[in-house]
Length: 62
Image (cartoon, rainbow, N blue to C red; front, side, top):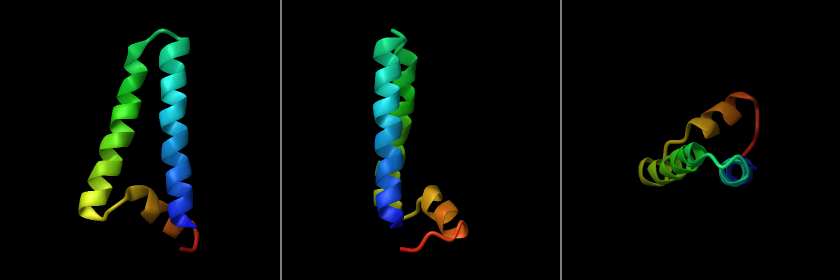
């Protein structure tokens, strides 16, 4: 369940930042996309994800 929430969270942030960048004509929103992508890459290498820890403390099961 945690992995599904993490993927949905990341996908939502990426799509929202792309939508904001195009609709508001402000490319600074793409920094959010870059941050989420970098965080996904970092968590795949280190096997450490802050959102996974937060979800665990909130009682979300694996």
